[in-house]
Amino acid sequence: MTFGLKRMLAVAAAAILTFGATMARTDAQAPRDVEVLQLRPNFFMIAGAGGNIGVQIGEDGVIIVDAGAAPSATAVVAAIRKLSPQPIRYIIDTSADPDHVGGNETLSKAGQTLFTAPGSIGITGDFLGGVASILSAQKVLERMSAPTGRTSPYPVTAMPTETFDDPRKYMYLNGEGIEVLLQPAAHTDGDAIVFFRRSDVLVAGDVLDTNRFPVIDVARGGSINGEIAALNRLVDIAIPSVPIVSRDAGTLIVSGHGRICDQYDVAEYRDMVTIVRDRVRDLKKTGMTLNQVKAASPARGYIRRYGAESADKFVEAVYQSLPQEKR
Ligand SMILES: [Zn+2]
Image 1 (tube, rainbow, N blue to C red):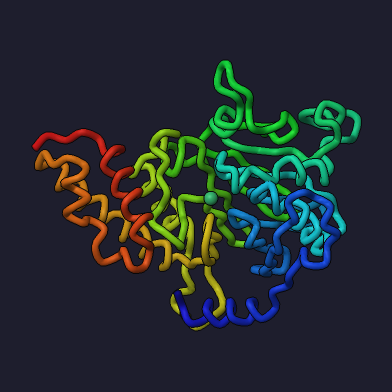
Image 2 (tube, rainbow, N blue to C red):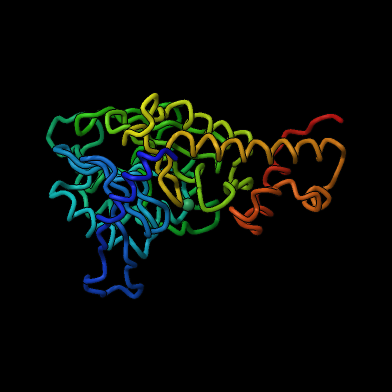
């Protein structure tokens, strides 16, 4: 991370506002405190509510990337109300994980769809019941829906109201282009990264988790090569503060969990993931079983930083999702 960005984050950290502590606690599960960090004049990150949440504000309303976990949702709504008097218009989900979609229902109901005017394009407000729209990759809706013969853990009002299956979905709200980029088969099979073009902020979701090795959910369509492709996409889009590295400038990347990154941080993480992938691949090619590969400690050098338990799961996911190669 550049000196300039570090200084900016230190200043921002000093201005962190804590919400939730003074709220009336009527829920069975008391809302946890959340932290709000200002990244740009009209862009904020909310931390401490499950996955990190991106919040863009402006005259069109509030656009949110990820809704956090269900128990924090009322605290998140309270925090957003202090940032803007405008209604929540859109919630964009980066995956179907409960710590990212758990707040969908509460945040959506606290909002108001853009499509309320008679004759407006798209789904009518009546159809949505007036609540904020929830946008995700098609696979997120499938993952949140019940498998045949079972009950979904989510109510209908928590489900995405708008889904996409194209590589890129875009909107223009609050004076800037917003790109929602599908990253197939990475952390899961329904990952999206969201790029706010004028704010120059990328919200990565769980393809970037600075607290641990990336979580690759092979059972839900994740894969190591898709994970590396997603990290490369972030590196390709982001621009660091060059040639004047001391400036408080450059693209900011909001991780799914953990800290805010610049392009160098993501490139370093991508390199780590690639090195471990290559080691596992080479070992697997010799015909080793998963346990033999684990015993060879392919995540060595990074375990102290990202954790032994996380390393174990990561190596397993890499081994399982690597395409079969000949010796
Ligand atoms: Zn997460």
